[in-house]
Length: 237
Image 1 (cartoon, rainbow, N blue to C red):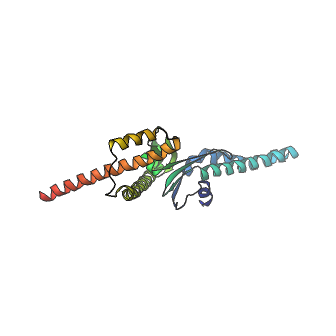
Image 2: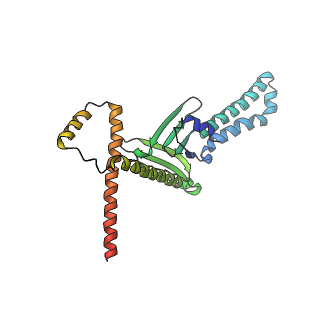
Image 3: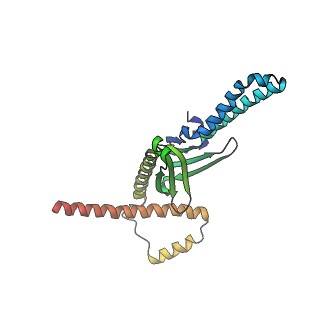
C-alpha cells in the first residue's frame, strides 16, 4: 500500500522504511459526509431531475461525477499527507489537493525534541493527537496532526533518534578515537578559525554536523565516566 509514497521520498542508499504515519481516518468525516451527499442525494431526486429532460440527466450525472472526484481528492490527500519514518530521517509530506505538495525532512542528528499533544474530548476518546518534531538551530519544526496513537509515534521517533546517535558515536569514535591524534596547538587553532571564516554556507553546514557530533561524543564520554565513578562508589559502600 505504501509503494507509491516510498517513491516520492527518493530513498537513499541503505535507507529502510520503519513506518508511515497518516491522519486518523475519522477526522475526515466532513469530507466523507460531503461525498455521501453528492453521490446519494441525486438518487433521491432522480424523478424530479429526469422530468427536466437532458438538463436534469446532465445535472444528475454531474453531481455523481463531482462526488466521485471529491472522494478521489480526499483519498489522495489522506494517502500522501504523512510522516515517513525511516532508519535515516523523518520525511514530512504535506499534500494539499491534487497539484500541491510540500516535502520536508529532518535527519535524526538535527532532532532536538519530539512531543505529542492530545486535546479535547474527541481526541481523548479516540486516542489521537498531534506529533511535533523540533529541530536544533531553528525555531521551525515538523508536525503532523490528528495521528492515531501519537505516543507510539513519539516513542518510535525517539528510539530511532537514539539509535542514530549511537551509530554516530561509534563512527565518531573510529574517526576521533585514535590515541595518536592530539588536539591542535593554539597556533594551529588560530589558523583553523581563520580558515573557517572563508568557508561558504554548504561547507559550514557540513562542519556544523561534524562539530555537533564531536561535542556529543565528549559529553557522552563524560557521562560514562560519571556513571563509572558512581558505580565504583556504590560498590565500595
